[in-house]
Amino acid sequence: MTAVRKGQAPAKLERNEFHLVFRRSFMDPAFEEVGSALAAVEEVAWNNYSNSHKAPVTVKAGPGFADPDYDLSVEWKDAHDRLLAAESVQKDPATRSRVLLINGAARNDGTCPGEMSKTYRMTVLAREVLEAQGVEVDVLDLSLLTSDYDRHIHPCKACVSTAMPLCHWPCSCYPNHSLHQTNDWMNEIYEKWVAAHGILIVTPVYWYQTPAVLKLMIDRLVCADGGNPDPTTTHGKKAEQAKALELAGWDYPKHLANRAYGLIVHGDVAGIEGTRRGLSDWLDWMGLIDAGSMARLDRYIGYFESYAESHDVMDRDLNFQEEVRNVARALGMAVGEARAGQLSAPNRALRSPRPK
Image (cartoon, helix red, strand yellow):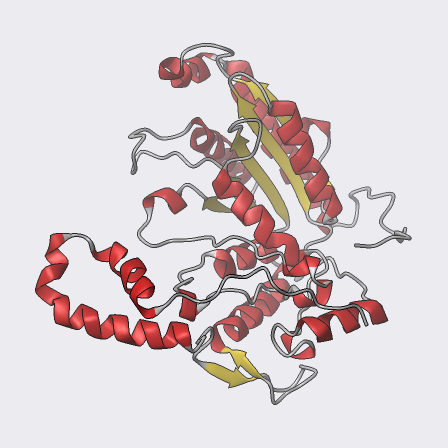
């Protein structure tokens, strides 16, 4: 058995350090009027932290799990059940085709920039086309992470690098109530991905990369590619048990495979091709099927022109707007072909000699 390596994590905060960190969220003088109540809440939070109350409310796993008597987080169990329900609807040939349209920009006019993003405008163009094709569209606007109260996509903790079965589908790392890592958006986002027949990601380039709001979601989708749908097999986060499972042979299930996808990547100076290629490689790896060359778009808007006029430049670039529409058209057609069993995926029957 390979050893589990230890020694990186720091010690827990002492009580006074915890007090200082806790109070940083309540610097507004308005909280002084409820100081005694806040102190009581702090004491409860300290006890939860010091006693590691990650999942304070649990339920027995029940039938269908390797260990039916294991206590699962009620929040994880609810997410698990909703994914099963969404998958059942998604596979029903009688349901309408559904596309998840993802706005990957962090900017919107409800926060500091004071102006909507061009990416959002592109999602509107794509949505109009898809709906005209009779496709049901679910818009996921990741800019809400910057404008909504206490909305989060917490970062991936890389459980998969300890052992694939330790990475649960859906992710069981959050919420962690003892660390105040709550209000995580991903359970809702997982359900949106599972319910979709096609995925369309629209994103700008930030410093040669995808925006942080999009990358947070991408990292947390690692559990969709090989993740363990039964946390009772590892009894939560037992690294030794997960390593033993993987070494005994793991099949790396691809939970989102065979959905069609399209991409729209835009920038103003550099990085569009590398960003689009990275996104394509990621989606290909997860087993999604690209909707053809016209569904993978990378373009500059206002190349080396002023940021202040970028929306005006997009207004004038009618060819670019039509290319955006073509991505949506291609994806809509690909979804229809995929559901009819007509979308070509020549390597579908091949099995990788090195799955991971």
